[in-house]
Length: 147
Image 1 (cartoon, helix red, strand yellow):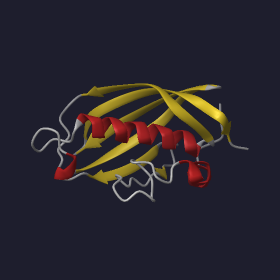
Image 2 (cartoon, rainbow, N blue to C red):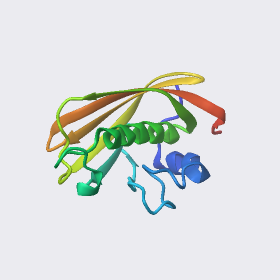
Image 3 (tube, rainbow, N blue to C red):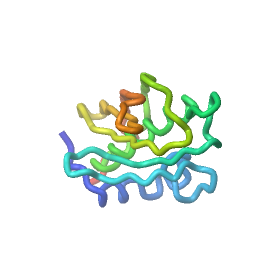
Image 4 (cartoon, one colour):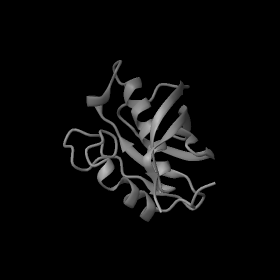
């Protein structure tokens, strides 16, 4: 498939590509600021404390924010494998409302790699309940495979 995911590979691949990313960028002041880590089982994980600034309906996290968090997790999952790719298709299933006043955990896992196409899955968990799941198809960017 690809290299085993590592935090070093994630940081090196993300490098200058995502400095201002609204989900994981460090240079943009208005972003979500998610910091991803690599778990021993190969999943990419981040925690997020939303707050009312990200609400849609009162008290609930906006669906667009949920989608962006899932997309960002899947992109960073690919970075951890040394792959720079763009989203070709994103499908999000909203299972339960995500409360804006409580932290959530997002995780992503590479499911299938057939260069230049990658299938990745993500889930958002809050209070031990799967609140949303996502599937994405990503297309490798030109020059997007790291050594």
